[in-house]
Each structure stands twice: as structure tokens, then as C-alpha cells.
Amino acid sequence: MATQNQIHLPIPPYFNPDTVGQVWRVPYQQRATEARAWAKNYHLQPASADKKRICLLLIDVQNTFCIPDFELFVGGKSGKGAIADNIRLCEFIYRNLGTITTIVPTMDTHTAMQIFHPIFWINQDGEHPVPAATNITPDDIEQGIWQVNPAIAFSLNYSYEFLAKHAYHYVQKLTQNGKYPLTVWSYHSMLGGIGHALVSAVEEAIFFHCIARNSQTQFEMKGDNPLTENYSVLRPEVMEGFNHQLIAQKNSRLVQQLLEYDAVVIAGQAKSHCVAWTVDDLLTDIQQVNASLAKKVYLLEDCTSPVVVPGVVDYSDTADAAYTRFAEAGMNVLKSIDFEV
Image (cartoon, one colour):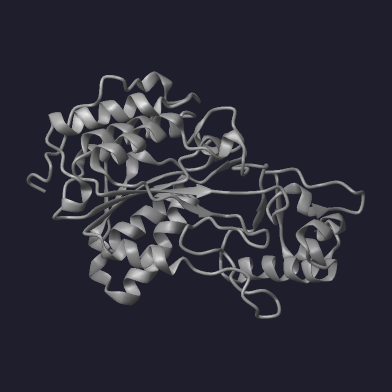
């Protein structure tokens, strides 16, 4: 792109990369004043004036995934993956402040009693599964290794019989669809908790963009349905229950919106899970409409990392294979400093 409100702006002096891995309060009023002055100084026009409309889709850039010692920190190969990713992401937002039309952060949003959390399941000894170390398969349920915890039925407002049938149907569907088996995760992205919040430095950059460009940040919540996982912001893992009744729906509104942009830039966590599955769902819709639309999608490979737990699991190869497939389908895989449309 030649010049749309001037690209590759400088990084505001307040940005400190050393604090990206920490949690702190964004000084909103101060940043708002600075953003207005920044826009005036660099002649930034409102986003509504953009001739080419660019969306920055940020997947789950939340404390729970991006801050060390939080529940599901994405360390990647280096052990500091999400921190380094978010430094580059903040710099990308500031440098491209005049060209990004809309920023859409997805917010993984959970409560305790969900199908992928320990309290949902129980064994014959009354114990809950060990998070991150437990996968639940149809065989596990058939053999009585794990069953739905009867005590949660009251709070979820379902009968135990319904939950038991649904849980068995659910893990069967995951197997049939070729998805990962049901993983019992640590409690994470808990609604109302600090882990649910955006990373402070990224929140600050997004807020600065909102004020400087007069562009309201579009938050997209996902994952609050107790009966299904929602790795992708575009659709849940399972949409129908055992009785063929809908339990969740595809986010068709967001899909349609993304396809209308001139470019969609995607970053966030984790490359192997929520990012890959969101991109995969977007690609599926693109191929149903017009395969050539894939070229409008830009994947910032240096602003995302795979799930790696040293000595336990490493999804690096899985993530890389997904990105190779996306590139072969026409999407642009590039580093954040090389973005240009």
C-alpha cells in the first residue's frame, strides 16, 4: 500500500517492551490525550475515511495465555513465546496505526462448570481429572473411567441424564471430526478474573488506536457455552447435541464481516490451537464463496506461538503444518515487519 494515512509510524515513547510480560493498569485518560495529539501530529484520518479497509483480528491475547505463571501461558519453543510475540504485535499496531481500520480482539471467556474443566468430570473415587494431563475419549466413558459429575447438573439447569448423554456424544463427535480428543484444561480465562483481561501492553495499543483513528475496538466473546469448546471464534467444536438439537451456532456475522475487508491480518495465541482453528474455519468459508479471497488474509507468523510443554507435549510441527496448508491455499504467511498490501 502506498500511503493511507502514512504507514510505518514511529513507536510512541511511552511503549516499554520490558513491561509486555507484566500486568498493569492502562492510564486511559493520559493515553487518550496523547493519541489525539499523535493523530494531529501525523495527520491521521478517522478510520471511516480509509480507502482500503484492513481488519486486525487478534486471537485470545489475554493474560491467561500470555503472561508467565498464568494458567495456560504459551511459551512456544523459546519459553517466552507469547511475550516476544506481543512485543512485536504492539510495535505492529503502532507502526500501522494509520492503516488498520478495525481491531477485533477475541476474548476466550469461561466459567468453572464447562465440559473441558475438571469439575465437569469425576471418577469412581470421587476425584476430578488432572488438568492438561487428561484426555477423555469415548472408551474412557464406556469403561467408567470418567463420568459427568452429577453435582453440577443443578447449577447448569440440565438433568444428569441429559449431561451424561451429551458428554458421550460430544467426545464421539470430536473423534469423528478428527479433532483433538477432549482435553481437560486448567481453569482459565475465567469471566471476571484477571486472566480474562487483555495483556496490558496490547490493551494500551488497541486503546491508543481506538482514540487516534476514531475506530471502536470490536470485542468478540467466545467459549462461554458449558456444553462445547470454542477454540475458533467462528464456530464451536460441536453445534448439535445427541438429540440433534442446536447447542451452539456458527458466528456467521463475523465471517461475513471479515470477508468484506480488503485485508484481514491475524495474530494471537495459540498458533497450534485457537489461531489455527480460527484460520481453518475462515478458509473453509472462503473456499465455499471464492477461493481467491484467501489472498486477502495475512498471518503474522512472528506474533503467534504454538503450545509447547517441555517433556510433555509439543505442537510446533502441527502448527507449522497448518500454516503451510494455509499458505498453499493462497493466504500470506509473513513477519510483522514485512506486512504490505
